[in-house]
Length: 338
Image (cartoon, rainbow, N blue to C red; front, side):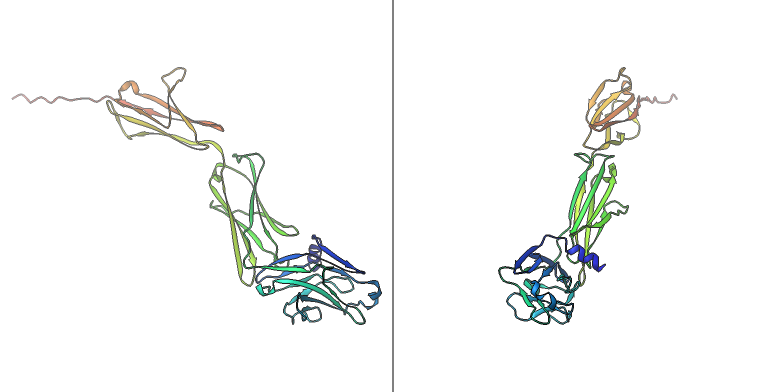
């Protein structure tokens, strides 16, 4: 695990300072979360005239710019202002360091010092060498959430990939990513790690059920206490008409002379256009457009099956209803004969 972390840290973009055989490679700036750790990837070299003085017992030390006391000493890594661990050995010329429990007071510039027996005692500071700036964030940033499509729009049946990522501040305690959605069903992403980020991909084939669903990615950072941040994305899915239906209003028996309205509804995105037909027309010709068909002063000639066609650019769907107009029968009551 330790070798993996060191390999991870030494592959970044680093700044070098060189003078008379002494040189150091480390980033100009690293960021930490308050309460977490920070890694400083670092390698150094020395002038060849001091090579015999460099042994694994040499002290590898860090100083804060402007200070005269070491804030970290490899010979006693848990006693200085900054506590943590330095990786590898001095003879490997490794100065990669992890500082633990970083807080706002640790912000600032730091430089490295090698201190060995004999004459090898050297500060890698000044204008020739870069110093590392440690920045401390009070809280973790929100994760990023992106949508990748196999076509320009999200259409039912197409493949969609939601990608969530968040920065790794402390590789020994990386954050975790979890998915949730407004659907009842659980969602699980495929998680992996890059050099600087934790990434989780959620891949699925969309259906109309995903329209209007909010997907949320939650990043959990293991600080002195757990800290979570979230990012959400609302998915808009286009799909052909579904669940098209027709109802009669008022419901129940339709009597001659009354008014009746046939209403058509359909679930679709984008919204549909409605067209009405009667089965008494051959071929079927449109009677009316729009979701409602109102017939005033009904009579038996209005009886028959009415069809509603719901249509958008992704397809059509039909539904029908049988309208039966009943003749009102009037009774005259005559007085009984005595």
